Length: 97
Image 1 (cartoon, rainbow, N blue to C red):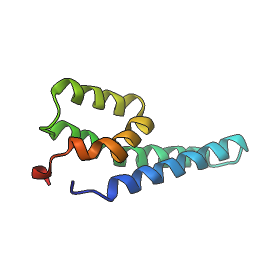
Image 2 (image 1 turned 120 degrees about the vertical axis):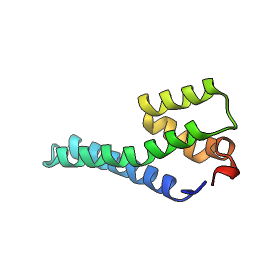
Image 3 (image 1 turned 90 degrees about the vertical axis):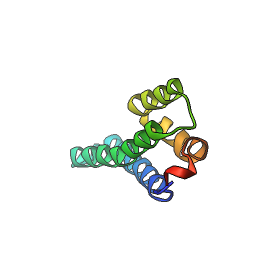
Image 4 (image 1 turned 90 degrees about the horizontal axis):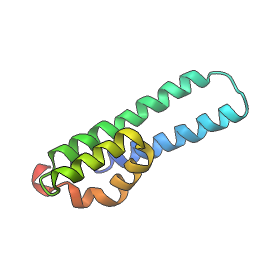
């Protein structure tokens, strides 16, 4: 678990970006496109390292890896939160750090 603080921090930053994006959208404020692209980039900053950790894991079988990766691709915010805050300790082996 090399990035033990990086992934939760980027996940929480992404949630904050999403809430700001929603507030801007509801109030019809300008520059929403810039915030949208910033939220996408911050989402990729935690989703890609999570998918790499999942793929390299030796503790879980292939079908569970596939389930986690599909979850990261389709419902990134939900699957990312579950992975980072509860399942990461079980999935990532201490030998790979």
